[in-house]
Length: 108
Image (cartoon, rainbow, N blue to C red):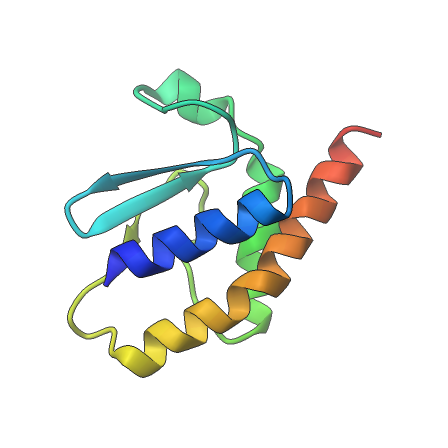
């Protein structure tokens, strides 16, 4: 179940012009708002954490609870049924717009 969510998130961020990378470990994944793979803590710290804050707040306002830190992993399990996945997927376009807008404020 993690792959459809991660792929949809990546597609929405790409459509919105947001630099990001999605990395997997089994059914877990992380989204980092930066270009290029993250292989250590220094690289993880170099991401745009305020973009994750925008993602978290937007998803939460739409009823989707994410890990509250840019340094945490998304855990997807069998308890996430089709309705839960659909709720996440439906919230992603609005969240991607919020993330994109957070990048606009960084560069000004």
